[in-house]
Length: 159
Ligand SMILES: Nc1ncnc2c1ncn2[C@@H]1O[C@H](COP(=O)(O)OP(=O)(O)OP(=O)(O)O)[C@@H](O)[C@H]1O
Ligand SMILES: [Mg+2]
Image 1 (cartoon, protein in one colour):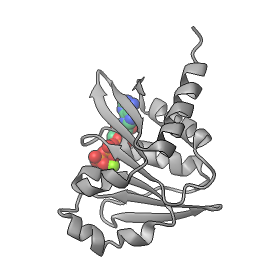
Image 2 (cartoon, rainbow, N blue to C red):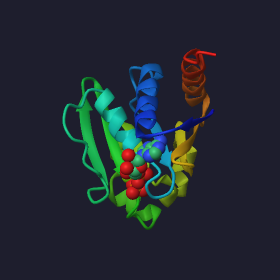
Image 3 (cartoon, protein in one colour):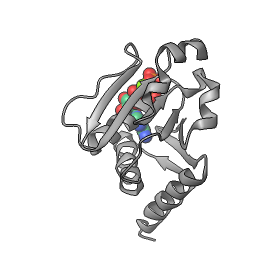
């Protein structure tokens, strides 16, 4: 599914719409957030974490690599692989210990093996003063979410 996000508020709104169609239990789910520097990956992740109930600031995981959240019954891991240079490092990071939560991964292409195990992918790219976005379900359960999200968005059109 493709759409245009005219400004940062539109990126944040998309995060809210995604949350509305996600299953209550997202333990073990992975959402890849792709796009070049400044494409809006953190904007989306922050909005999603806030929408899931986090009341405070959402710090960038660029240096810590992982920022964990417990949001009601939902465990969320906000992950930024920008500084990762090999998949080996991912193992040191304890990737296997993050299975119990919903992983939001910025710069997933730093660890190509990750894509095979992911459920959802949001790709952001610059277009005019805003961004183009492609949201894709990468497996069966991910496709269900993509379909629901597409329905939410097309249902909102006034034309
Ligand atoms: N749809 C949009 N249109 C225009 N600007 C946007 C949009 N979405 C986010 N932005 C703006 O883009 C800037 C960069 O956003 P953000 O930090 O989320 O990018 P990022 O992809 O996480 O960058 P990095 O690669 O450095 O982690 C912010 O100023 C944000 O407000
Ligand atoms: Mg970022």
